[in-house]
Picture 1 (cartoon, rainbow, N blue to C red):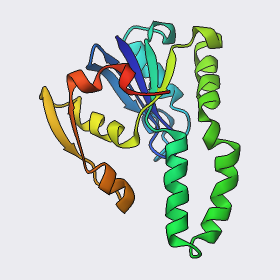
Picture 2 (cartoon, helix red, strand yellow; picture 1 turned 45 degrees about the vertical axis):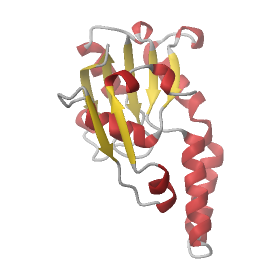
Picture 3 (cartoon, rainbow, N blue to C red; picture 1 turned 45 degrees about the horizontal axis):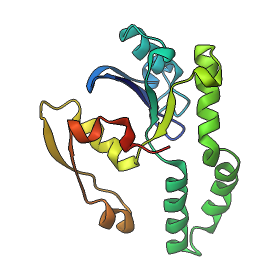
Length: 182
């Protein structure tokens, strides 16, 4: 099973290719663009990973984005509400971008993948979205030599911290794509 993991549109865009649970290639977009903390779609990093893995986008079983946009939006709203009225200027600046672009990331990602590969929507692999903290945990776990591990992700939000203090993961638990919902 080949899975392409991607992050982007926030900071430090990157891509990683896994085959049967093993890392084949990984790269940050800034290594190719020479833009520190590049937040663009990681097209160069994806191309590098696919080339290293000797495969194309059509050969992938799925593409997994590192976060769930609606979940992130919910966390953002909760944070703004907890600091109201102090964050109103930031809130007013952030909302148009979220309402116009970031909430509809699935269509943006499909468009970028189509442009990168030159294939039609129906030929694209499944596009899935992982939990943000699960993505952090996976980035620590997969390069490790361990078959199982307890991973602690610390976060600035008390609400998130109370719900996601630890993630106990194994290659068996994290590998199936079914664990990541659309």
